[in-house]
Length: 216
Length: 50
Image 1 (cartoon, each protein chain N blue to C red):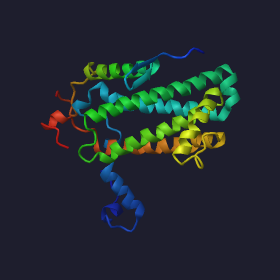
Image 2: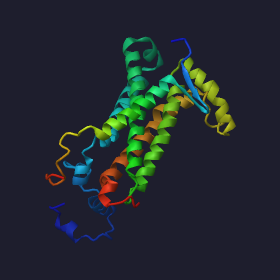
Image 3: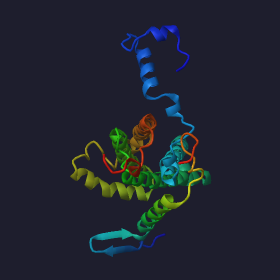
Image 4: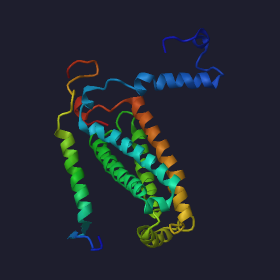
């Protein structure tokens, strides 16, 4: 920020250079001290604020164990000791991901985390929750065991009654597995990155008591 | 493993014991997070006390 070149100083915000305009927009809205802060306001000193970062930590383990499972394949995760361990790691990371995501949701709901221009951050969080449920559902269908068959055979009627069975066929392992290991995790990861960037752009919302009332 | 799980049924509420434990545990964890002291919570953004 401090050491700008003379060329950059002369350039106005209506510059024809899109890279310069983009860099200036990033500097304005997300300076590095916002992106990677070393201090937080005093009201962030509560364990409630830890739920979000624990959710991210769980997601990292979900992705790491998922990459190993997709690389090695179903026979490995069913028949070998290490495969079963990584399979369990994947499963329990998902459980923790959902538990802490819901705890994070409760915390943000009760502190009205959508206040002061943070509505989009809240709504993206809701979308992450919905896409995560779909990702977990396709994961249960991709286990290659009796449980997956049971869920698939029972879920197909619900999908057909909703009118989406033709293009979301829960009995089609290839489709469910492809969605589970490719499109949906990429979607969740992109949305989580966007969510974090938006949180860092505006900072953590002040407690309601700090404002002397619960005005939105 | 091959025995059916226990369900609790009150009126329109039907929930398995496992799910009830998970939800109960989450509520307890949330309550602990609200009241448990957080390390260095007294230091503010400017390094001062709140």
